[in-house]
Amino acid sequence: MVKTDHSQEMLALLKELFEERIPFNKVLGIRFRSLDLEQVCLEIRMKEELIGNFAKGVLHGGVISAILDVTGGVVAMVDLIQRMKEHSIEELSKKLINVGTIDLRVDYLRPGKGAYFSATGVTMRTGHKVAVIRSELHNDQGLLIAAGTGTYIVG
Image (cartoon, rainbow, N blue to C red):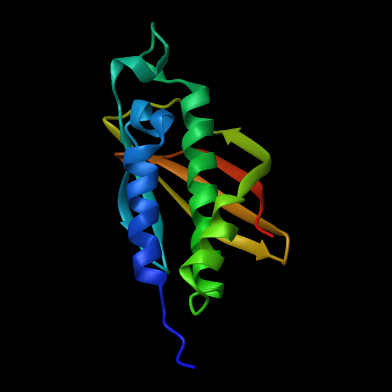
């Protein structure tokens, strides 16, 4: 039996789901700058609705936490897609729909000042049940604003 690699199809589906179908992500304005098996980069643009400190005009800490969490979840899903790329779309979809956050730690390093912010993530470790992902949020000047370490259920 010939096995088919469904990874590109699943990545396209992830992009659509996270940008167009998740209402909270739409409120935040989350867009993918890149999404492939090697790299995930999400971006949000600063807008008035995302300000946490009105006097300083900086990004709300909850928004920072949310984008780091979404990034970590997507990285965990991309890892699953990579590991299961020759499985059927149905098998892979069942796994992806169950990915969820177990724990998230965020280190706020600088005020969230900038016109836009980009978040990337890398896998620290993936097992049969749990993945640990490290995510970073940078502003448009390349300054590290926050970093997060998340644990995600993947099995």
